[in-house]
Length: 71
View 1 (spheres, helix red, strand yellow):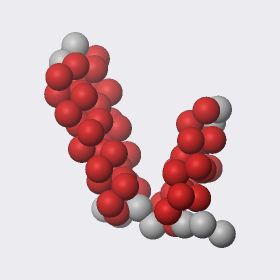
View 2: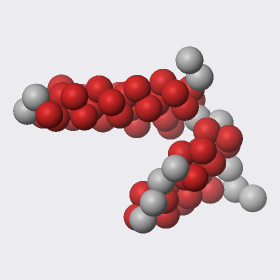
View 3: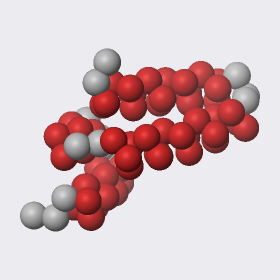
């Protein structure tokens, strides 16, 4: 499992916790996934995330990637 795929697995776990109404664990998993993303994503991982996003998320992910990997 690659870095990007592992990040997506966090998203699935977050959704499962939220569906069960377990917002405490959902929030903990969100924090864990953000820390994982910020510490492990390569530029290619960021580009893949951006390509699969839309709306405000696409803008924010692009901004975050450019902070880490300026042109």
